[in-house]
Length: 400
Image 1 (cartoon, rainbow, N blue to C red):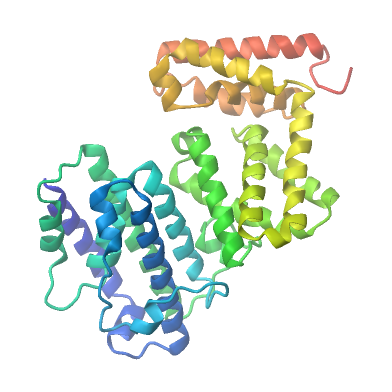
Image 2: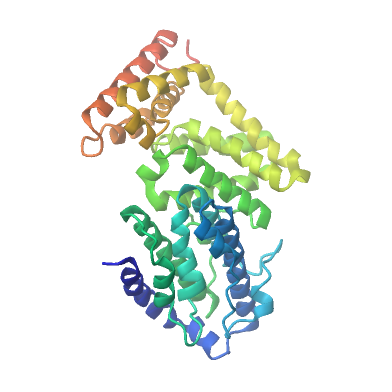
């Protein structure tokens, strides 16, 4: 089925859901309360700004041309409000969802630029189509002569779904008002733990999370989109630790690192994320460097504990050996797997009992990986454990 037909079919279902919401009906009847209307305008302005910047950031000429377009404002919306995104204060926590989707667009501009077509289609053409226009025929005309492969088409459909889901959640919460903690807008399963609501800090936290997922494809392979949302909410929570003393921050980070390592994420991943997060925060708000630097100091302390067991050069050695064993195709598919396996062994010798089993059971699954990969996993674990056993005969570092 052609992409435009698939878009039309999926969008019709999304539209029916959005248009049934009380908030949409109130918007159409011009009875939406002023506070809800302003929050909606802020969210749409943030999305428009993020999409324009993401399209402009690609090297794809057709996408750059789309970024230069200034889509007309729908008659139901106030042009003055939609044209100006908030710079510091958020009118409502619901806007956090728009910020998160905006950072997804920014990341997509580099990872899979053609997926931006889905955001463009959903947010500029299909969500609030102008009277007398047909988003499907307009998009079909634009696509004429442009061939997308199967993966690219799936990317477009996925980002259309992301856009409509966000807007549906936003409208549902705005009217009648539904109270959700700020973290809910990043991750519905995050509970009510605090996160930063400062616009610059929030963007920095989300960018750090996206960078971590880019560094370790393992995140996406194993934990999918649900896991990405936990990375968002955890990263935004880590920002709130910046104003605390180092001992207290270390207590929180040690707890989180142990929890994640027992669930298949070696502490190396958190260590690297903290460094990226600190850099992003300092870049966003250099005047608060002193508060943010505690995150990089704690990351260095984590690294110090690991280096007592396996050093940086040894991790690289295990990583290179693993890559050579699995070959270029698989080493690129799941970059850094060898280092993660060695880092899990370091965590095991640091006292985290499930660090290796929680990672190795997934890495050795024959329905997921070919036999050479599984043999490389077993070899890497054997070698790393042998090295650690020679250094720490008792089985745990620090007990010698």
